Image (cartoon, rainbow, N blue to C red; front, side, top):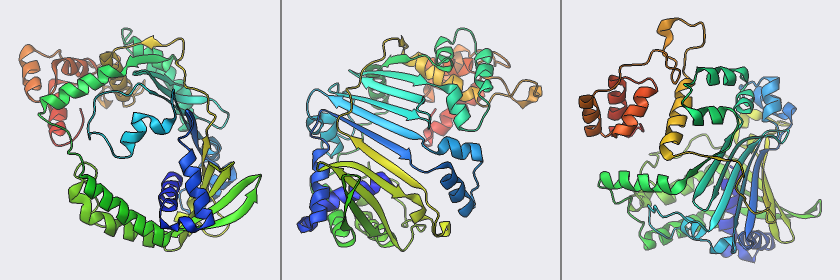
Length: 419
């Protein structure tokens, strides 16, 4: 919500309301974000454990004290860097609407990193993308602990894995993995070509212009900017709008144009969301030296039953001096097939029957227990005809799926599910 409200504010500030001093400051702050060669964004739950507990009680969704402590201060950080100003990077230009709907050519000019960090600063999940290569690191025990589970189940999962599933063992051990993104792009291109698909049609530039103008009209009529002066040496702006009215008007503006954007609005709702409050909803924007520094948003604004005194602030911070994204030095290279195998193994092992459970409770995926019969050549051919490549079928079979299981997945894939 903080991101959405920020984008709304930026779009509004670039329109006819620019004669307002507060809106001018907001517009200038957005313009400066992409001027540098690096940028860091950090989304955080800026609430104390007591605030999380109070919000849970007020909204009839009680939270355990330990879970509240874990959630408080949880952060998702994104860092990006390039050899030229970010606003000139192709990825940013495509994000603004130019370029084909489907493009399998990787942009090597942008380096990017994501990190999920707990309140102590420990990184639970990291992903980096550099020169068409990706790097992944997972603190499995930390993630389990964050979810309120017993970290010892990670060791249990490691003991249950087949010995030849090295990549899966490396993930559980907290080691860095690296893989070639171009392999993924090439596989996606093959799959897309095999389906005979040319990708989603690009939107008509005139339709895109019509949509943008419609949204600008809504935001310019409903969003207001208020200069709150200085706070901690930064310019403080309050940007707000009547929540229910904005949602209804945006829906009315977009709905008639959905047919012109089949790739973007193929599943547009038949009615606007009904759970947005009638009152004004707003964000606090902070500017440092004319550049956007942070945006804070109180989630409690969207929950009428929260009541007075209950607050759940979240924050989006911007850092234009973020260091360049670098590759880790000790990553183990894996192929696309190995990575897919690892993901499937760990995902299926999550549903494994615990030690001591009855034999009928289900197989231990990835452990070799209850393994189905190997697929025959005839079965492989039948699955290939159903859309499951031979390599994938063999992988699923090794992970504990029978021929009938894989056929069922193939049928789901044909109706829109993913195998």
